[in-house]
Length: 374
Image (cartoon, rainbow, N blue to C red):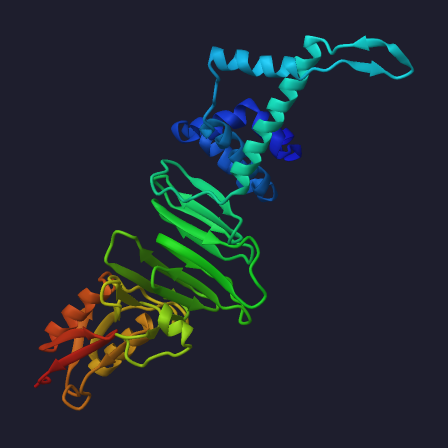
């Protein structure tokens, strides 16, 4: 596919294989994958390819108008009546008429200009986002200077932004972003679900707007689930630190301490569930906390007569969570157990059973309560 590296948008729009991919790519896995691989290897051609795709789709979608026979006769009658004799310079006695062939050429040219004008008007207007589009869909909103990409496939799609940040966009989700970020900010707009791996830039906060919620970071990784039809928005952090605000809280530049009101700060293995109807946030641990390898190596959870304070200390470091318990009451508790293969919550259940205690999650903290050990 070497020839395509030299193609313009018009060249692509006239190429049979490319047109076939645009029209049928999603139904032909091999062809679809071939072009996706080529775009990965030639990211500098993405803008040209997008322009060619818009050309092809505008032709597919443009409704054609064919005048009736009566209308055609009327049009040609007006053209004929408008043909006036004209004099050839320096030969005033000789009068000429254009031939019908000449007028057909002129009419054809006028028609082409009109069609071209219709195409330009159509493509210079912002294209509305279609939630029902069956395939991957991209357009430029010229009014807002944004690019919108919709993942209409059945697999996650990775986008790389101008600053190097990566977005893994889930199916039936859309993201809007500027081709070039402003000097002091990086703003994107999400509908649906995506995982963000944000390139660090302390001078340019990265903000994700999803309905009424704003998630802001400098450089970290996190996921957001914000489908229009769902009543809650979920923000979960994998690495780094994330600030989550309601749009009202961000505009007022205030961060409330109450995690159920204006905003909250999240760290790894923490999440926010935001109720759209109640405009209320609830902070908690993620459904399946993972071991964080920063600052801790070769973590194992083999315990032999281990004081419970050491067990809880290891869990706090490994998962980045706060465990609250009464050290004095549980000073005589020791643990003998192998917990390597268990999930975080299974570890908590087994430990609690082993020391005759119980646990609960409150505001992303683990609360251990019990009467101690004999």
